[in-house]
Amino acid sequence: MRHTKVKDLLNSSVTLQEVNAKGWVRTFRNNQFIALNDGSTINNIQCVVDFENTPEETLKRITTGAAVSVTGTLTESQGAGQKYEIKVSHLEILGDSDPEKFPMQPKKHSLEFLRENAHLRVRTNTFGAIMRVRSVLSFAVHNYFQQKGFVYVNTPIITGADAEGAGEMFQVTSLPLDNLPKTEEGNIDYKKDFFGKHTNLTVSGQLEGETFAMALGQIYTFGPTFRAENSNTSRHLAEFWMIEPEVAFNDLDANMDLAEDFIQYVIKYAMDKCPEDLKFLESRLLEEEKSKPQAERSEMSLLEKLNFVLENNFKRVSYTEAIDILRDSTPNKKKKFQYIIDEWGADLQSEHERYLVEKHFKCPVILFDYPAKIKAFYMRLNEDGKTVRAMDILFPGIGEIVGGSQREERFDVLVEKMKTLGIHEEELWWYLDTRRFGSAVHSGFGLGFERLVLFVTGMTNIRDVIPFPRTPMNAEF
Image (cartoon, rainbow, N blue to C red; front, side, top):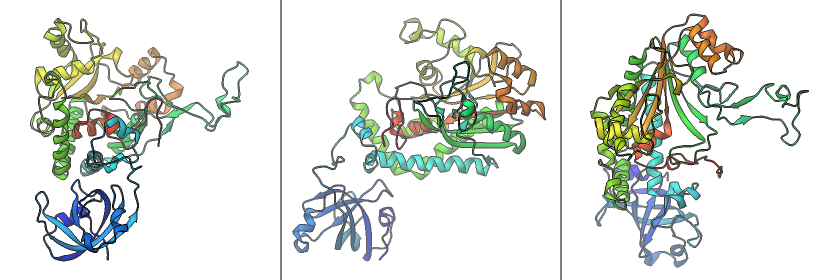
């Protein structure tokens, strides 16, 4: 007999049929009631065992974490809290779980403990919900761009280009580290390496994506990216996933329109497809917030925060205007900000971004026209010569979620900017070709997928929204 998913059993409209379910035991009470979960839903199905006619040896093996197969009759539940239950006629233990050793016992575990057991944490309600939401959001990303006629492009993971110009990259080599070949000058001889040159793991697929946009019109990438930034914070990962659309003939305004529409679409999609998971995550967040001082608690529940993004147009504000607002703000004047804003040109921190969204404008904010000095070389220089056509989208509780820009399409200006920053033309000759042959206005943005999952699930640490986090001094699993 083929087994039926728990989700389908709970949504069934036909009772008194014989069914088979397979899953893992969450709890076993009174030698009679199994709470069974197979990962298809946050909800368990109760399986009622006839303990008087079940061998004692079998009952002892029904422990938290054990994999079981139950066959029986699907009936309307007598107890509160569930619609249906299975009256078990036959039970088989598929895989034992030693209750003395299984870490995921039915009790409250700290998130740090669960990170140390990342291979098993997905068996908890919280992480099951997060990973189902992550999966749905991932599908929504592809759905959105495919419906809009974008071409999905797989950009290289191994690259010789540093798109961000920050130099915080993981090096890729096949050279023997204990006996590195050297040039006559005493430098490492990368000509002897696998690719014959210095290569790294990508920090962004943007530059390669631009070349495809200048032929296919509108493209998007969605793949892993890597930053060797030694930031041990709740917002940074060394390996994460990036979504990067690039669109030919789009200026900055069209780029902002696209980003706003895209974000609202994927959030709405997740809310429509994952109502039970999000309701659970909202309850979890409310419980967590009770332990915080009143001043640190969020003003909105999780679903209110998500609806806040759907129901409010994003406020578009220039960097210069934002600096004036921050400089004159009460927390800045009273030195409550960790980073005091006293001059134009400052790089905004998360506390400033959240102030603008949560306290000042009370809606999502898109900041644009940033100082050229704090932005990447490929962003289009404005006529004032000191700002670039960059934009960042700021969200409540999280700060920056999207960064993008109109790209510098003028060959001479781009070359001049690269010279100023010490980026060699020969390194990016292929990128400059897009400005030599049929250059046009074009724009794009990058969205760190984990930041989006973080926002939608209400989690506060980015390590909890990716299956196996990679952070400084941690590459377990």
